[in-house]
Length: 266
Image (cartoon, rainbow, N blue to C red; front, side, top):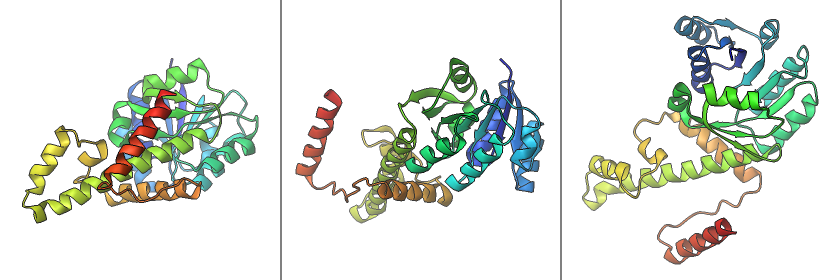
């Protein structure tokens, strides 16, 4: 079913999600204050771009996807949407939030619209292909699921309450940061041990030490790494115990593995 979809924030992920929605046949309106970014996206897709959230609400969208950078920006967008939207509009919060902010936005909006907390994972490449992972909380309907699986995601995981998707997203990114750093550290030590770092990277990409983030070491932009650092800090601020992990501590490795296995079995 063709819908009118507003995407607020046409950055690395938001722009790719919005372009994907255009390709699968939705009427898409981008919201982007950066003139150069807005022009480039509009020229690429042929779709309309406006500068303000208030402007897009005049187009009566069926759903609004919020893909901005900070929780403060997401809250501001949510408030602007509710000024002229009805309770049937779906507001997809795809910005990575801290768990408290996610709940606060839903509470601030109230029943004015249907708030769906839905951070995404998978990066720009998955956004282009429509194969992101979506973590969802809120009053989702079958039509929302159909939209996501048709344009945005390969998998949608549902959670009981607001804040849980944000927390899981932060935990996922903390694991990603750990994988990235371990791989970078090993590559850095390769020369000291008489091994070609390029050859080691090729082995790690296809063997038991492989990880998504490990394969990204050479091509990961500094701003993308900074976002991982930001998310790890948010997780620590939420009370997660992020003690240093010594991979040479074999007893600790076996103990952590045993505890994780028991938790998963339960």
